[in-house]
Image (cartoon, rainbow, N blue to C red; front, top):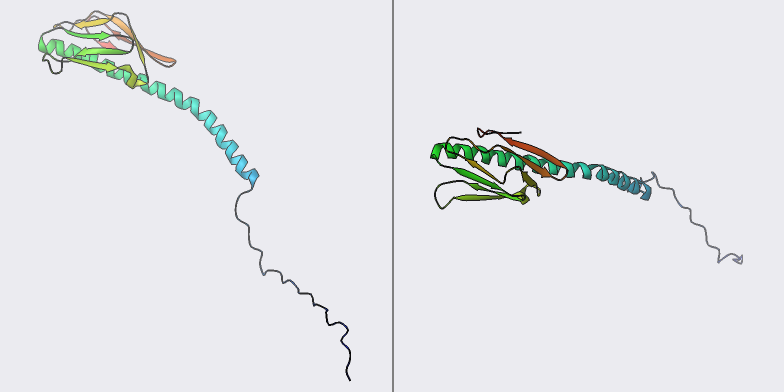
Amino acid sequence: MNLPMANTHFITPTLRTPPERWQAQTGFTLIEVMMVVAIAGILVAIAVPSYSTWRQSLGLSAATNTLMGHLKQARHLAISENRSVKIVITAHQYIFDSGSNSTNKNLTVSMAQFNNATLAPSAGTFTFSSHGTVNAGNIVITAGTTSKTLRINFIGRAYL
């Protein structure tokens, strides 16, 4: 007996087998990335003004210490070499008479290397005598919004 095959074109459905364990998805969502960028932006906005202030303060301290060191050295040279030693100060540099020979006679120190600090002396030239005395005065050193006043008394001592 032959039975006619009525359903020869019938396709049996395939069953999907669920995975044995779900694999965890890796990566970050767009919202998570945007939150991290926003927090980083806030931190940068807080840090940049502090960094600028710190840099100005560092330039001011370096300029003050360098000038004070040269003032003390000028007094020492004047006494030890029994001669007058001059420091000529302008707004953006000072010239230090560092020796008696021609090879290192004048040392020019630019304030550009100290975060563009500026100098405002009460006298343009400070001359140390062979006795260590000097014309007394003040030098105001300014870097950005901060400043320090360097005082020089008549016996040649420099202090803040």
